[in-house]
Length: 334
Image (cartoon, rainbow, N blue to C red):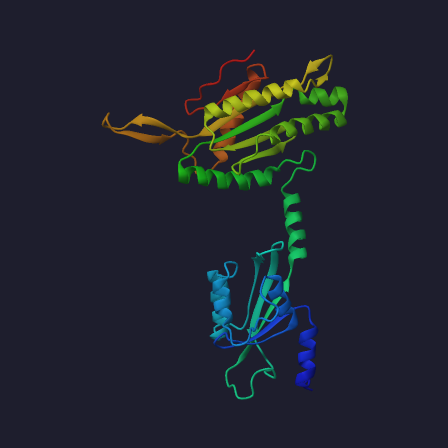
C-alpha cells in the first residue's frame, strides 16, 4: 500500500533528519523543514529557496564538503556506478560550535515526490547530526591515550606522536630531542612511605613535565612505572640539556623526603636528531649530515634509554646525552 503524497510529505516535514531529493543532475527538487532549519543555523536566510540549485555545486562551494571523496561518492551514485554512498564529515558553522554530520545518498525506490513529467530518477540525500556521538567518541579516544594517574599521555599516544614528529623532523630537517626521565630510588620511596606517597610523587613530577609541552611538537608521557618521556620538537641537543637540568633542579626543589631524609631526584637521558656540518670530498663544499639514521623515532627512544642507564650508573641525579660515538656529552653534575 502506497502512502498518499501529502501524508508522505507530512512525515518528511516532521522528521528531525535533514532530507533533500535531487535528480540525476544533482538539482534539488525538495528539502524538508529540518534541512531549511539547518540552513538558517549555517547562516543562510530563512526564506532561502533551495529548489533547482545544484547540490554538487553547494558541496563544491563549501570547504567542509569540497573533498574529492565526498564529491566523487555523490557523483558515482548519480551515475549509477554504486547504489549507496555514506560518509561522516566535520561541518564548521559560522557562529556555532563545529557540527559532525553523516551524509547518506542513495536512489529513491519510490518516486512519488518527483515531478510527474520528469523521467529521470530521483535520489534521497540525508544529513544526520552525530555531534554528540562524535564528541563522546573523541573523549573516549582521548582517555584511551592518557595515563589515568598523572594525566600525561600514555605509551600508545607517545608512539603515534613520535612517529609523526620524526617524519616532520626528517622532512624539514629540523631538530628533535627525546628525554627519558626516571625517578631515582622510587621503589625505596614506595616501600618506606607507601604507594599513596609514591603516586603523589609521580603526579608532582608529571606536573613539572607538563610545563615544557607548550608547543605542538612537544609531548610528555608516562612510559611505565616511574619512567617518563619528554618529546621536544625543533629542539637541539644543547637546548634539551638546558631543559633537562631545569627539570632535574625543579624535582629537587619539590623537597620530597623519604627513607631517612633521602631527597627525591631524577636521572635523565637525552637523544637528539639534528644536522651538523661536515666536509664532503671537496673541502670547500660542506654537506649536512644527520646524527641518526634510523627508519623511525624508536631509535631515539633506545638511545635516550641508554643515556639514562649511564646516568644511573654514574650516580643518578644527573643528565647524560647519547651521541653516535657512544660518548657522554653532558658535564658531570654535583
